[in-house]
Length: 212
Length: 186
Image 1 (tube, rainbow over the protein chains, first blue to last red):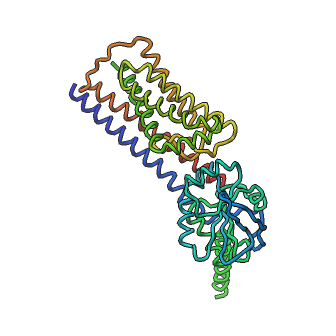
Image 2: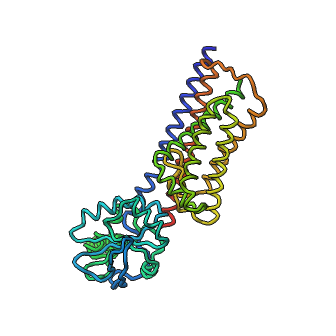
Image 3: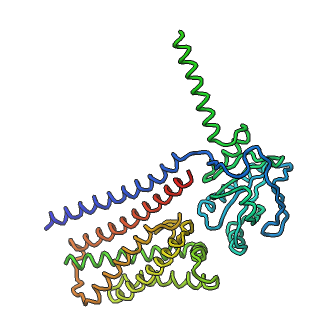
């Protein structure tokens, strides 16, 4: 009887330990998948192209403040398209607040969405978004052809589109600023150029070797 | 012996799942209320009363399941909450609104959207509740187990294993939805 009891305990310990290991591994699958996902914001080839002047809008935000989009000014402007029903947007809001603080010298952030006002007011209040202009306009989304969220568009001081893309993390958001700084449309373009440059370099090297 | 131990374990696991669900919803009641609003099934005035009633039913069901005499009522309440949650999930999935907060909470579910896998999960829990109801209504007797012997170990092990499987299933559903989302964006 004692032997049966001991073997029973041992088996249960093993079974429960295995369950804990499976739980830990299943968590890691998600973490790993996100880590290996593309780091740059994913540019969707729709709407005003990088280098084009942005459409101009004069809108009132949720609390009635005048908000001008695409007119340019002393600061660059980041249009950040969100929705109360988008879980990733919710996750990114603290990051947007942090970016607004760190980049305040040169950047103004405008939150944009469309839909029913009460839902957005509740969202605005819940996430304490008073520091940002928050505009509701279906036309804004349509003119920039925003199909998926969260989507960000960076306009420079002259109201020209400098970078844009789907944004799921701080890295992807910052990749838009980097793209503006180094004068490329997106991180993808940078990597493509980089790969091309390396390809050309290695071909030349190979040719030199052949000649040598 | 074996059937009664399995019944006890199924009952304890369901009680723990209901109590954890209620605890998690209470921890961020505002978020749960917003999730109810996100389902777009009730008028705005009903969101708070419904959310409060749902959490109360879930918690009461969990507590009742922990006692022998309250098992029938507990399993019944648990089943009602599960069926309501499944109806909400199914209607929104059929509407194609998968990108809303499921309101299941972080401890016992996914906060990344809706999926048919959540319906499958709730169906399995419903089957558990029905089995508990059937066993008790069938006037099962002899609930005297040797808690310090093999019975006790089997009960604790089975309960923890069932809870472990539940958490693993939730985790895999969450990972699956995150991967689907990433794929659809690329």
